[in-house]
Each structure stands twice: as C-alpha cells, then as structure tokens.
Length: 107
Image (tube, rainbow, N blue to C red; front, top):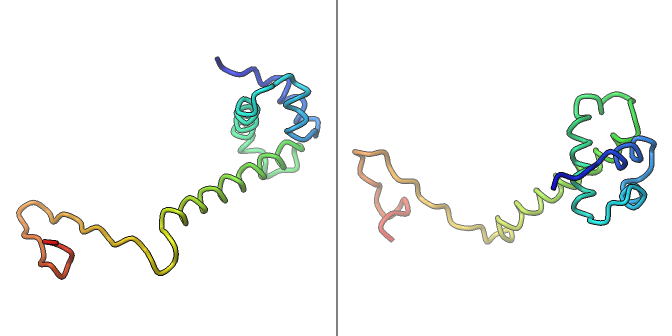
C-alpha cells in the first residue's frame, strides 16, 4: 500500500528530526519513514535552495548519504588500488576484423 505521509510531513515541516517524526506520526516501519522523507524532499527540490523551511536540512542529509553510498559502491566494484579488473575488449563493428592478441582478443 502507498504510505500516508501527511502526519510525518507536517511534523518534519515544524522542524522535528525525521526519527522523532516517524514515531510521532505512528509509522512503525523504517522503510516507510524513509519513503515519506524522500517523497517530501522530491517535492521540495526546487525550493530547498531558499531559506524556506527546516525540511531542507533533512533533505540535504539524505542526498549526502546517498552520494556517499554510491561512491562506496563504486569503490567496491573497482576493487583495491593496483588490482583493477582487466578491461573487457569491445567487439569491432560488423565487417571489421578483430585486432590481434595484443589488444586482448584470442585469449
């Protein structure tokens, strides 16, 4: 079901921290609370550059956490420094011959 974020939204707009708003608005599931916060941030994306409301501070924290998580995921995918994954050769266009073994073909 789609979460009802009205009480959460009102609470956070008053300047209360998200964790407190989850319990005050009766949201038991942390995932539902996160959905309400992200939805509220999405709705405010155009106004958070202005000194409009306290909600924007929470949105900035969410954005910074997401960016940090994405950077960590990228580092994990690349592996430790000095042990990068080998580059995968790209197939040549149709009608062209593949380069020799020096370019990674024919292993």
